[in-house]
Amino acid sequence: MPASSPFAALLAATAMITAPLVPIGAAVASAPVAAAESGGTFLPFTSALRRCDYSIRQYYDSAGIARATATVRGRGSSQVSADVQMALAKPNTTYEVRLIQVPRTSAAGCGAGAPGTAVGALHTDGLGAGAIALSSPVMPGATGAWLSIERPQPNSQLPAEFYTTDFIVGI
View 1 (cartoon, one colour):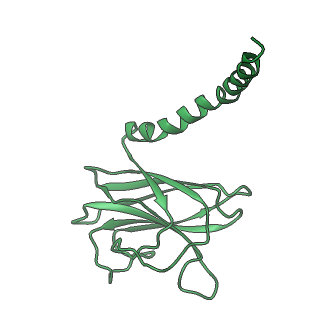
View 2 (tube, rainbow, N blue to C red; view 1 turned 90 degrees about the horizontal axis):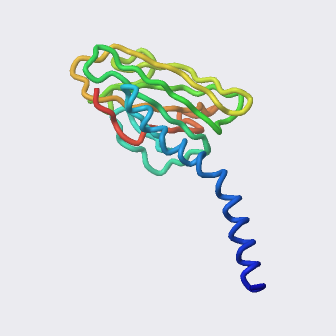
């Protein structure tokens, strides 16, 4: 009987440690479902630098570790909108967020004022969190949209930090 008491104590300690973690994991797993039920498409971001036509610029790494997500709405409507959230970004910093409609050529710009592009500034708080909502009329012939987040780099045309959505959502 004494041989089983260390095992029983270990089992009880493990149960107490893991029990509080279950509700946290369940809440995280249900976030994409809640976004889809509200009429939008949930989009995660990765650290990839893309051209305006959604092709990847290779051989350039980002310096950031932020976590960004977005919910895009606009299927079957004359407007496309995106709600973007960031966490773990550089505190008290301004990021440029772009909602870009496709198809478009790589020669067509996707900066402020370009057709089919909505641009806004996301300001992070002291903890590195921020949010922004973008909206724009659907461009004639547009079939999808994606998002880009960039932090400018002084004395360079390339951004210091960048994130783009993992896929193009249909609109």
